[in-house]
Length: 374
Image 1 (cartoon, rainbow, N blue to C red):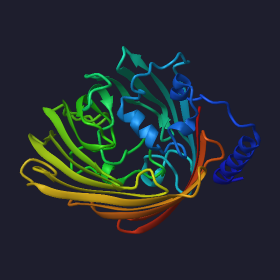
Image 2: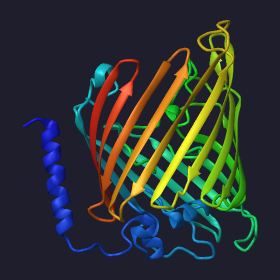
Image 3: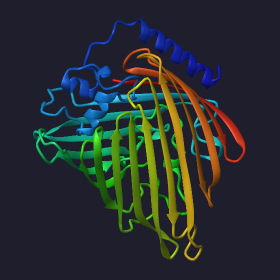
Image 4: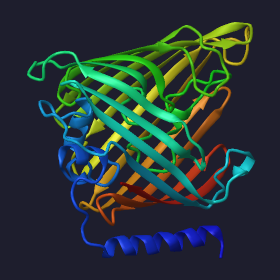
């Protein structure tokens, strides 16, 4: 039996077994253990956050004024994928089969004092290969919980504050092209986490808020030496059902015997994030002073995506995304990703998606993934 068909059979059998089991007891994953709630308190269909979950994350993974209870401080998440394409990093996916254990993640978190939190997200397996640490940070609310304008300080390795999360809360298996985009010899991208410090002022879910990041100019596993200090500023405003975000990232990277001074500017619009029908749009432009090597001259880049999601009930949803990127070295690419997701239990999810990609030839890739968090 082909590997893809075998994995599909395994997924069906697993889902059938899960669906026939009694409802799981509350407080299985890490945070639900600590606060004695179910997964549904923070998530609609795993890993999509609801309004309470987003507020919990914005508060530094704390419930304001409450001390988390004792719990075994480790939880795990696994993702199985069967695809019509091989999953390796070599030419045409060489190196890995079409059906793989895509991700195995371990999480640990806990309170630090009355207003602080530490958090570690370790990929044991990532993309079917040996994984790396993604998030490893400590955050603290500087002023009291009762203060009208919250102020947070975070330090360590963490995902940059973008309008739409590039990894942890993404429904699709296919990543966002604009977040993974690199230009010329510059290895910078928005998908990978960055090491540094961040200051956040204001409630990210209500009214105006601002964030500022600073950290060494380095991209993990790129082989490019650290150069200078990168900075990022984010301004957001929540206006009823609309959330508007603007961001700017500045940095430098080596380019031949000189350096590439670059920036990326983006705008995000999120509509009805907690409603049954929601949409998210991100548009980004950029500039690099040296695209390929010293003396080659600067170049512009751009990209973005728009996506919509409809939640039929607590188990079933559909979504679709259209996106594209453009730069002189990578050319013009675009793709369309429709998907359907179903949650057999509150801590499992199945998604089926079709990636129609134009780069510039048109390709079609089907992916099915089974996700479980425990």
